[in-house]
Amino acid sequence: MKANAKRTLAPRAVVLATAAAIALIGGMGAATAFADDDGPAPKSSVKLSQNERGLDDAAEDRAQVKADKVSYDEATAAALKAVPGTATSAELDHADRDGSLVWEVDVFGKDHKSHDVTIDAGNGKVLTQHTDRDDDAEDAAEAKAQLKADKTGYGKATDRALNAVPGTVTSYGLDDDDRNGSTVWEVDVLGKDHKSHEVTVDAAGGKILGQHVDHDDDQNDD
Image (cartoon, rainbow, N blue to C red; front, side, top):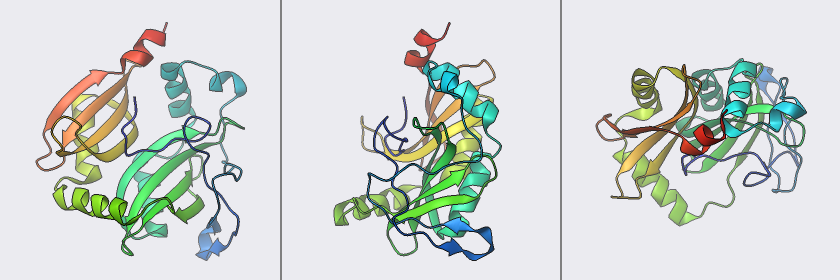
């Protein structure tokens, strides 16, 4: 189960928006995309095979982590270089169409807009970048409120999660706790036990609020 703040590549949720207009960014050769939701998914330098894309969730997570050459921290740094601001979520995921493996990073920019940045999981290059046009004033206000409440940051939150569950971070996201409305970091970790763990970290104080194995993954895992 993924944190609500994070997005996935289609057709799991919404087709990844990509280039209707593409421009090179500096020496990185990164493509900046401003497209509708019907465009093709970006192509990464690393891909999952068709067989790997058909695995159950836990096995698929393991395949993605094995193929990934870029850490969540490196992917976030690349996204923040492209869009100065504050990272609010990141997720390692692949396109069902061709298996391209990418990091999806959400950044609340200094322009007070939400930006979607896609990072190649093989070489760390920015593949696409666009403003989330679905966001409205209410969404922006919510993001600002969450960031104001956050005193931990994604770096400390993921560190706390890894201290609780040694392994590899596959996603993180700043979100509201459905039970009490407090702001939390939801961190997904593929543990050294080869199981997917969900760790909830209090955004105000950095305390671990909850931790459990993803039961859906666990039940599908042989």
